[in-house]
Image 1 (spheres, one colour):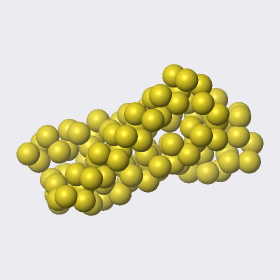
Image 2: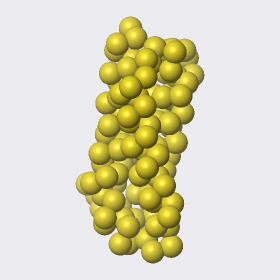
Image 3: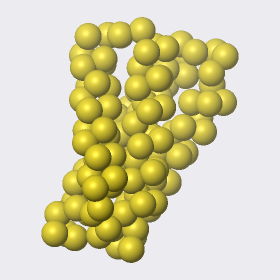
Image 4: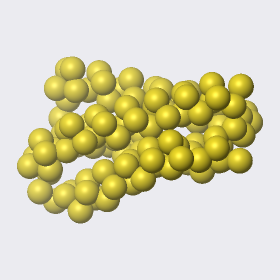
Length: 111
């Protein structure tokens, strides 16, 4: 069970980080006022992903499982927002939520 939990968390963290990294330049150019937030968010997504890769993630309590479901929903929303070319502010808000959730679940699932 611990291996499956870690795999899911790493996959979701990787999606959030990789997708934000891929969209970063476009978002950065579009959002002059939110550049510092965007830069910090990318750093946080990167840190959460590498922490997920490195740490022993095996605490699969109900709250962790709930957060994983919320991350999947957030990442699905990001994918849809990119495909439908949603406004920059909407996409940044989705990334912000996903990064917060990933960071929280990585911290909570760490043994």
